[in-house]
Length: 115
Image (cartoon, rainbow, N blue to C red):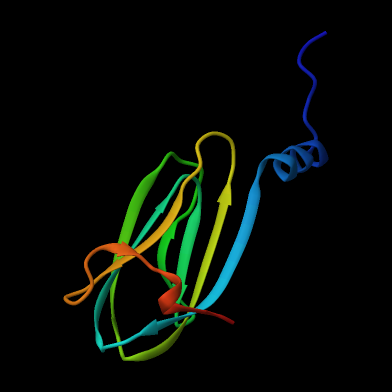
């Protein structure tokens, strides 16, 4: 009889059941003007946008890994958006930062405000 074919509708339904997609919008407070190194650790796809510009693109289905990017920021609030999805397998998502004054660490609520 053979393997049943998957129509686009069936494929879409399978994806919708097994993929979680989320967006987080926040403002990030930078307390001093500095070069900041941002790290994105994720298991499956993720992207960071800062000041409405894509900073890190780690899209696709993959195991846990890390990407990083550096940006010069002035003191003040900066729009920050994290987009990610999770498919089968392991879970993982972290956003960290580092500068001359900040040791590599996760960005805490002290530095975030909901938009």
